[in-house]
Image (cartoon, rainbow, N blue to C red; front, side, top):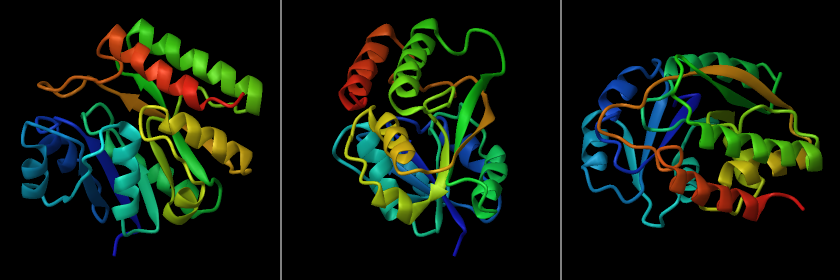
Length: 219
């Protein structure tokens, strides 16, 4: 029984998984959620020893929720499956939750070089956080692309969005519930070759995500 399961929501991330899963710290479980892939993501994940969950409903939130429900550990970490973040940085996050110093630890992306985080994605991120700060007092600097918390309290929050608005709704509900949210830097690296971001990879993707964010922002 692991103390933490890493949930990797994936759609066409087969090229990223071998290197990414190889970096998972010893003792951590891996739950790969295949969210409509056509590149053999599920088969690659299974061959690497990950637990594979199939979620037919498209959407980031749908994949994350399915992975959290399937996880068996007390703690869950959610990490993008594109190889842009290093799971070896997760134990420091886990330690803060296990020590009772945070209810959820959120990653703040720190690009390892210029040009990795497109201007349109940064602008959308900043606008959402400005609104959350104004409406809820949330003091984070990123919309938590990496999160570590306990599984049962996370499910009890009742996050309903199943698209890109999931992390925004999660942050708003966690803040309203009085969770202690702690932010820590996490390295943001180039995506694995052969994969493409569904959000920051294009202006169109960013606009689509922004619409999802707007739908769940507190009024």
